[in-house]
Image 1 (cartoon, one colour):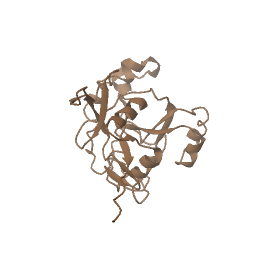
Image 2: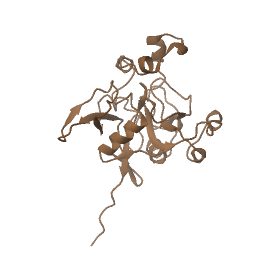
Image 3: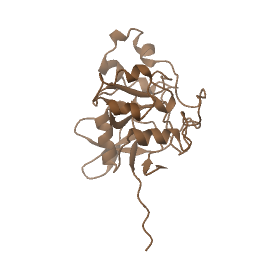
Image 4: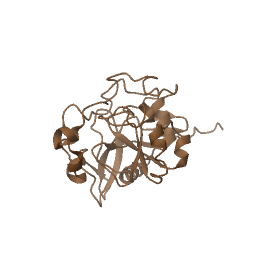
Length: 239
């Protein structure tokens, strides 16, 4: 994990393992939804396919099963910007190709260009979407997309759920575009995910300030992922 102030933040987007009643674990496909009634724990490592198709409640539970918690906006935003406070993990301005962003939208490519015909379970959660070569990347694959704290893929690849919810205080925590600011009251109480995914650029904000506020805690699709945080342990006092 990366040390960010008083917190530790996973360096890579999470993947899931199934936790069996005897405490052993089994692999879970990152292209499949978590199953009801099964306990999952979050893991973080380089070079793996991160878990998508996950909602905010499932992400929170998986972090807690791993002895961690879902990151707050303050923790997530700080880890993304690095010690120098950049708008992108690698610097103040966008560098094309540095992070996994700006890819074509797979829903249009695979399910037709009429959004009104797309169905939530059948299309937005189609396991084939993230298996399309050249779109979802393995953790750490974009070597330049790393913050000064060592956190990878915080812009692009997958949206990442955080623990905060939408409310008036959000405006004081992160720079918001005018169109998003105007929707705070309408979306109050919704969950939040950050950073954009592989088919976005700056639709909801630039770089680390990309914020999506329009979905509830049970929402999930091929773009939604997460990472975990925990409070940093204080060094023992000298005797």
